[in-house]
Each structure stands twice: as structure tokens, then as C-alpha cells.
Image 1 (cartoon, helix red, strand yellow):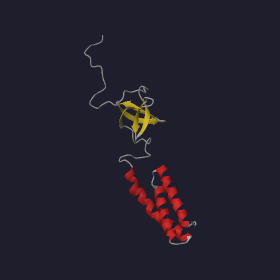
Image 2: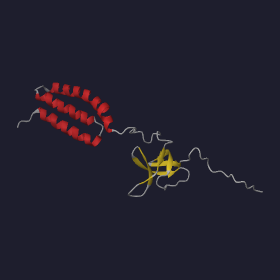
Image 3: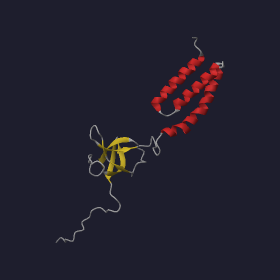
Length: 164
């Protein structure tokens, strides 16, 4: 079996497509498909400049297609990746969870577990299912406050007893 330049493009296509398994951004998949199509063009007997031109054209068409059409189908709705810690979560209500392996108390923000600490008391342990309000991150710790519903005013001294 003689080595053909089309085989080189096919090996490149395979490596790029396998590399996509590690990233999930669909960029390497688009490049892998473009390399496979370039292998088909190479099999027709075109020279290297035409092969590179066809690779550029296939990439220019497939890359935006994969990023704008295919990638959103693999991402859950409502999750804005890369925004955690920028302040967009401030004021959101979360329910505390207990992590299985170390029984740590935390909340899940965009699918990631963060240990938490009460901003007022410094408490790090909460009962499972406690509603908290996210305030900010300090390192990888979520600083929260306990949720106070609007219809329940903070407890005040309403006793009828008069002090002398």
C-alpha cells in the first residue's frame, strides 16, 4: 500500500475529531470534518495549494456552523458558562446540599458545588435544604446569608412589659 497525501489528511481528521472529546467546544470537530473533506479533494489529485485552499474554505464554512448550530444542542438551557464569580449570581436563592463523601455543606452554582459560609455569623454548617441568598465568592467559598421572606419581618421586641 503506497502512502497517499489523502491519508495524511485522514489521519489529521481523526486526531482532530478525537481531540474534540476533550474540549466540547465543537471547534476541533469542525476542523476534523474539514480535514476529512480535504482528504476527499486530495484523492481527486489536486496539488498542495488547492488542498490548503479547500481546507480554508471548508473550515470557514464548517466552523461557524458547528459553533452556532451544533454546540447549543449540547449545552443545557439557561446555563451561561464562564459567568460564575462575575456577580451575576448575587441575590439568587439557593438550597443547601450535603456532599456525599465529606458531608460538607454547600450550594450548586451552574452545576458546580461550592462550600459556603454565612456572612453574618461565619457558620459553615447548615441543615440540608436550608434556603440561602448568595452574596459573593471569597476564593472558592460562597458567602451567603439566610433567606428572610419579605412577609416576615425580623423579630422585634413586641412585648407589653414596661421596664422601670
